[in-house]
Length: 307
Image (tube, rainbow, N blue to C red; front, side, top):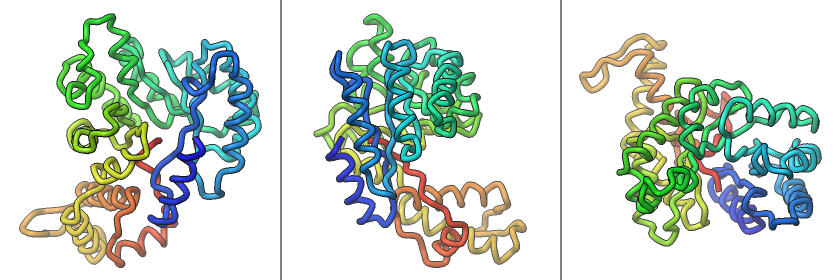
């Protein structure tokens, strides 16, 4: 956790903005019996993080004996320094409501929830979960999802390549992404466990972004951060085209235009502005005439990556 926060600070200085969140983990990170001590450690790290750091915490599931204590300690003492709470093993809207009430009791009712979808039943309820105002993002928990099928999905369904091939896994990804986009939430893609295979990592991140509609992704190792950023970033050609179209739209006072013999209006302007937003989020350099719009609007990058 300490190394992740150090890397975040280094890359924030490099890019001029924070390009990924650090999620401090209580669910798998806390030793059995040592949950209170681990929660106290998480609080100390969050409070000691740099002022411009983006720090989140994955607490225990709502049914775990340590859930209430996690929220009371972490959200209660460090809520003002956290970007969100990651809630694992979400099965239904009831879990979201229970977590929301716990946050209010801890005096951290402002904190958003990111829900981790890890079972067939949760996928079935993804649209209901995404509709909750407190929920800002849904993440896909691949390994738990595969394990929940009792061997019906082979282990290859958890691999960097196989997770894009097995129909049940593909369906789960699409349901989660679609639920998020239906309710204006952020779909966050699952991890790739082959952290030493950079080609597989970047290929998976590219498919998640370009084919499956995910706008955010998890990393489990520092070496994965740059490949994910590269995969989610628009190309130089895309940035140039988007910049030229937005500039022409501004000149036309947002009326329809012809650009490269193609009609563009407010629907496509919205798309190309989103291309520029994605470039901004991934640390890409925008043309000066586009940078001024982001500066004027005081737009802060919303990272496309969680570590």
